[in-house]
Image 1 (cartoon, one colour):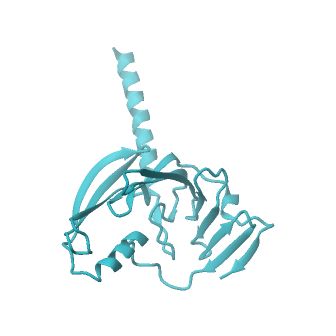
Image 2 (cartoon, one colour):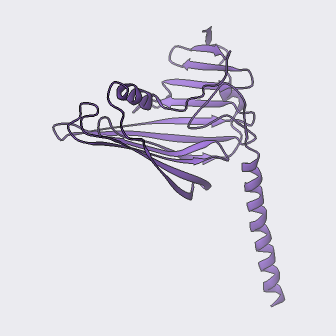
Image 3 (cartoon, helix red, strand yellow):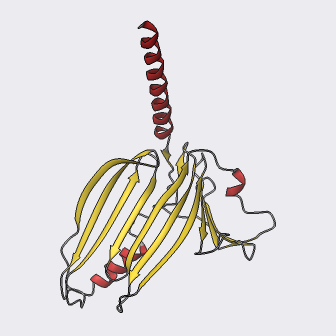
Length: 243
């Protein structure tokens, strides 16, 4: 009886230690004050990671046909907050372009591996305050030419676990009344996001818009380990052009 109790205490101790370790790792994710306002993986200090973001787009055509495209983005973040995105076009095995955001030096790079060229731009102002995506900005610009539509409905979701970490969800629904933008029937646009505020990452984002189709960005293969420092440097044989 005593031996069984001792085993239970030891197991509980190991579980508590693992929980404390995970909590400490998450709590060390300090926000980086700097120029880069990145939605999918934000600059954070003390919580390195690597992951794959799987992107998919599907659309139903007027003739009933379907179009579906898939691509992926490999993402890396180191302990000082540098973030790198390797963007792969569909069916390509090497990245078509690479983005590196370095809040330590206040610079960002746009790299074209096929040409061995990197464009470098420096930060000289405050971080952007707007977190509205390009599609939403386009939608807002279109809406400004028509009578105002009712405001969006916001629904809080979660929490739940994705890729082993706690995330909370939010669903935003816009309804565009018939005739508001030349449409002959009401249009409903839905965006759903699942975010880890502690780690500054978005693990899932889905958007459904009858005008443009369905989009999904899903983070997979998440590993909380330090990436190779070489990933955040432009190769020595590349030409760097300042913007």
